[in-house]
Length: 275
Ligand code: 8X3
Image (cartoon, rainbow, N blue to C red):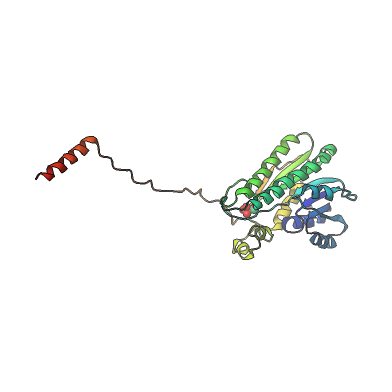
């Protein structure tokens, strides 16, 4: 029996692989960058299986999951961690390709993998799906457009799975982190503008991958009768602001004289001509 963790080559995923192996689980770490996973395997040993998988491609998911060796072929934990944000432009300036990639990875990939693994969990009446959502799925912010919408999907999908899975003993949680550093998240979002990415974390005590890995492992180790539906985590340094209100003075109303005033002023004018 194993736990499958996507996005395992860096950040949250990598930290989760270490934590879960250290806790005694068999872990499949899935990602596109196989060389990073192999380095992780050299460190973690035989409890860790590197899996070359691009979650944005349903075909790649099918291919990767064929012929998993024992004991990795029985997956009782699925941690849908792979996902990305691309760009922070306003909706009218954003690139559709970026929107498409986010939808394909954060929504389609996560949904397809869940659809693929879920039946075996239901059949065995045992399983746990932990999705990585985001505070962006609850709180809108400028430039969050499709990224936030994709995480709102993950949030609602997680809750709807709970509704469908009643009586199956399969658990589902949505983990919703806020500002997290020491990951590639912002470097990817800003497309390699590492200076801009670094600025976001300047003088901020941010959440770290290990904080998320600790939380996910804690969830996984709750007793079988406990389901934490969602868990929202922010650094203490991050909080909420007032909702902005755009104010614009109305244009001055045209001055309309009434008929009596108009005729009086016209009469005065004509009178003045004969003076
Ligand atoms: C990451 C958190 O605030 O950058 O999902 O959207 S945020």
